[in-house]
Length: 124
Image 1 (tube, rainbow, N blue to C red):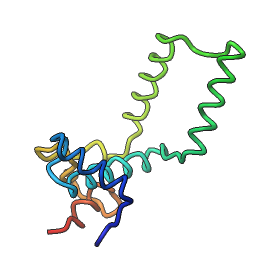
Image 2 (tube, rainbow, N blue to C red):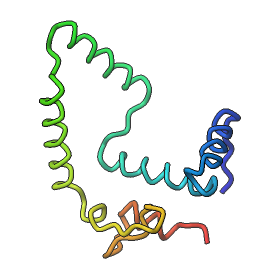
Image 3 (cartoon, one colour):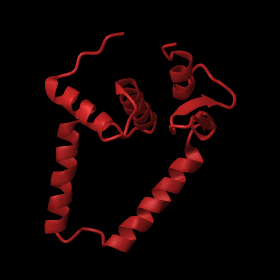
């Protein structure tokens, strides 16, 4: 598979590699796709328009004095994280990671698991 990026994205990829954050373009793209598929499985994919609407909503809530203070927000965030961890699919919980922190496989591979799909379809 060949992937063609806009020049601005290519520059960002080269800059990330030059900064030592990724060993090569394949590593960066693989990491990005892994994060994308995890977010997708958790229902956390949002486009720019949706993010803009969420920001506008937050600003209007602040204006109406309906915002949450910092400690209360982080308590809710922690509770949400615990709920996600408790309801996460077994495939995600059982991921083994390679030395770069990328998912290498599930303990019990499943055909519907994002991580197993990535592992089974790695370019050799």
